[in-house]
Length: 114
Length: 111
Image 1 (tube, rainbow over the protein chains, first blue to last red):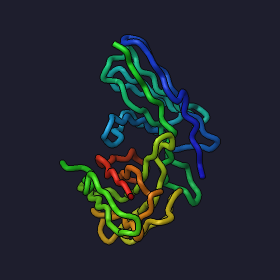
Image 2 (tube, rainbow over the protein chains, first blue to last red):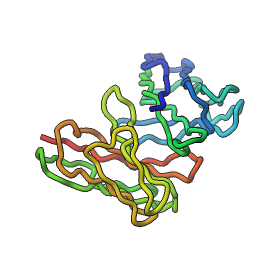
Image 3 (cartoon, one colour):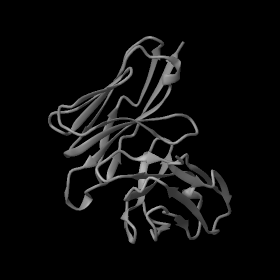
């Protein structure tokens, strides 16, 4: 099946630092999504991107839909302790028999030291 | 708004037992899906549905059945539980071509 390569797998940073993570795919996606999962909870949608080249912000979070439609990145500025969690990218496939299926990356585990 | 509601939140089964994980959404979304989450494996798609009466297999469908008799409900059935099905299960719903909303998860242990 479709695979998304998300990196890095984990990050250990100091409070106040900026964070960057990305996802790449071998196939084209129509939509890129970024989720955050807190311990014991379901993933929560942070940012949705619907157009190639689109740059969208949500507070301290900024995400971009790559021009090739095969990649996306998420930046978190001035990290705080509550940013701790697992961040997932997800891509919505462009067509064919898999139209409408959402594929997830493996996740980036973020740890923020006060 | 309730969003996506999953029950139960926790469940312990003996090998061979059957059970149904419930999922309901109140957003009138066409698309619903079930994922399992295992350490280091991310979220893997079990089954999905693009509307009432329509279901299809995902990446890891073996050992699971689904049905979609209404837009709101999408139950997941384990016919004969196995230890390999110990996992956290998430139900999600979305409008087509939009981001998915997840339930809080069902933590299943099969002993």
